[in-house]
Image (cartoon, rainbow, N blue to C red; front, side, top):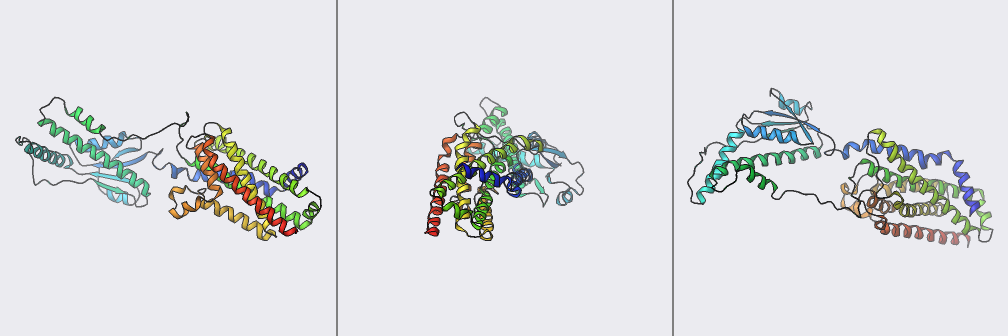
Length: 419
């Protein structure tokens, strides 16, 4: 076993391409993917968008809507005094989002609120005290988008503006009803009570003292592409096995009683260690290097050491897969392309490239049967959901079972060939 470990270590050092595949290329991939996908994760989280507003209204409603937009930490207001060509500027992309508040917005809203208040009073047997114009039509706020703007940004601002206008309508209605109220309390108290009714509160529960981390490009890409790199260990493992088979070294080992089993254990132990070291070295990129690119720092959950059992299980599954490819296939022309391409396919359907939530339902069902998904889901339990290592036990069991199954197949195939 020791001799096999030393032999594999020397082979790895003599193979610069294999070393490149294990560390350098995955490191570059992590940096590139985390940087390029950062803007996608920050769509409406950390970026402030400028909203061009043409306020034609001279009353309080237009100012209230502008104030609500400007006070939001997601948007800033750019007032447009000259509306000539304003719509064309938005449609041509000069302005990304535009809002046109009509001139009679306040008057129309006051009139409608008066009608509602009079209707309430009439149903209660009270006289209609507020004047209203039945011929004054309701108005609409015009919303303009650059056609090239992402749908997620459009929907986000459309929803936010809907909330702001709803608040303005509620405030106006409270003002009109307050004039007819006989009980104590003014408009401010009524508005506050209405605003707090059925308000939203996001539930956040800490798991044994550790809060969940918001998902960003670093928290997704660093562990996901690291797991992908661990399974690429299939290339050096299968390559060395096939080379030894072609050179006759494998035959000489088989002639020594008990040597095959010990040699196999040596190979497995060595590459499990390589994959484990590989994982934590690539994690350092997310902790130390990515913040230099103005990206968030990787957070490895409550304690980094709690990921060790899952990492060892992942390393065993990846090593067993590489040993399986090197055993089943007889030539390098068969093993190398199939091994590498199969890992890419497993990564694609296992949530490594993109989050599973945006994939079709059929793909998410298939992902439940991939070892890369098992590992990545366990890592998310630690790094993103803030749980402890016991939450990874199902993933560990699946990965170990996957490795044992492949190892058993390798033993069976080897016995059949030597029989």
